[in-house]
Length: 232
Image (cartoon, rainbow, N blue to C red; front, side, top):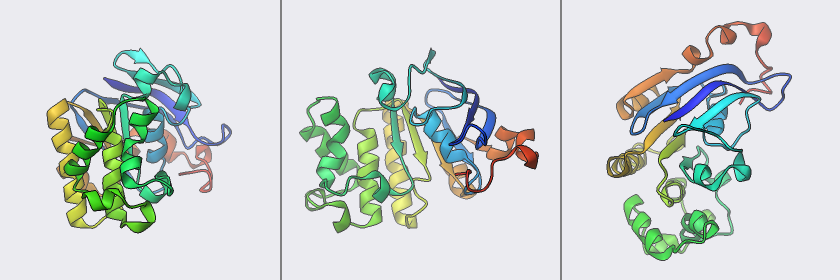
């Protein structure tokens, strides 16, 4: 089980993006986190994936409290997550070919990567020709396919998709959602899908949570909210 317990987080302790937010995700469950742009849901997703240190609260992964954040997190916890971000060009090293991009987590963990890269490339619909290209030589949709493959390389138990399809057309969106769901059927991974498209999240996920429900009364108290510059 993935548990976020009374989490407060932001980029300035004097003006947190949100306070005292709790969310639970069970193994195999798919949860959609629905809210408008800039409300703080991406920050919560980064905390859940151990990529952003909260100001207060706890993250508990399979019964064990998070042992650190980013590279200080224990490897077993850090590799339990696969994350796909909204903007693939900001999360992909422009110097790497797509095959190298997909293999990044495997190389970092000193694992054999050739067969796994080929397997994932087939799963997400990337040809050998595309795998030889660099990010500036492919479309946003093709690059996001590679980023999804990268997120799946270590067979994570938890997937965090943060506005994964916001910049994509309908056909690519359907293809990537299909890849995620096939992976989840095979592995029983849990999914937190963050977005502002209610129709997509309600069709994709078994349960949809409104951001306003999580933040509760704090969201309604304007005197306690951060400035617009601090919200992300």
